[in-house]
Image 1 (cartoon, rainbow, N blue to C red):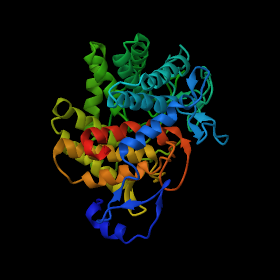
Image 2 (tube, rainbow, N blue to C red):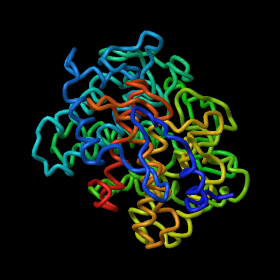
Image 3 (cartoon, one colour):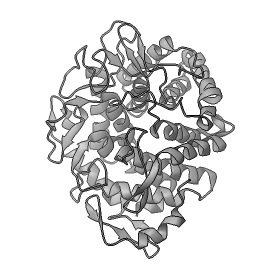
Image 4 (tube, rainbow, N blue to C red):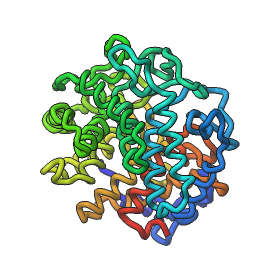
Length: 423
């Protein structure tokens, strides 16, 4: 059954006083969760907290540390690091925040450049094998550069994840467009050329790239990776900049998405498995992949897909049916089949995509769900701006992609759709 905000109002209004995340929950007379502070204030506090992060070895600590606590200290329990995802989405977040604030604070752009510099200088595979000089999906904190055998989490030592190179490459093209620094474009081109060289024809049982690959030999592990949207974004962006060499790979990828992956939504979802670096279950469907394809459809509309509205709704419905639930009386979205927790990255992604759908289509079907999800997500931000990785309990810090880098850009997308939500 699809979540419906109206059917939850009685339940929420009947709840006793409670805390959500780091703050007492506030509701209006209809039982709708209100912001603990205006969104504009919450994200400003959060960015300011990160602007004060210590800089060591040439980078702020959160640029090369995935597990960081509320005192900017690395968390001893886990030294693994996800450079492509964490810093790639972080570049997108900081470029959006830079634009949102009218490009008035050069420190914000500097953070995006720190992330880009780390990816270009410190996070590549060696210049050899099937995936040479390709940005790493996983590694270890405080490595400058990452060693050849740095695979961590569920990656084996010499493995990379091709889709994460697409995320990082796309972010670097955006950074190049903002700064005109050619090193970012050259790394994006390298990622795209390696992806094009290793692409195979997608079918009903395999995506154009496997989920994981030994960068030395090209041996794959996991026939399907559900995240295809950012490889498509990377090819599209480079083609728009005049690099026509990627047209055939781009067209083949889109044909697979359109004719195999999207129709699979109505089947068993087997083409929407495997995205997260710390999981390798072959049946692990995720909410992140369909939501991020929906976002691209909603941005591009007919320029990408004549059926954009129908396809975007199908992607949202797939997510609602498989990954949503109720926490603290609020409708939330979990991450994946094997982890239904509303981590900050996925919950903010969910809210942003529903907001973009509402804006693009004029339908209010998901508007209330979007607003509630994003309010819930921002309750994880502490008074001093330090965010927790999720709002299901009081916390400071944690997994930095969920706490911050894959969250900020989602809040900004929702504000762009509905500016009044920021106030």
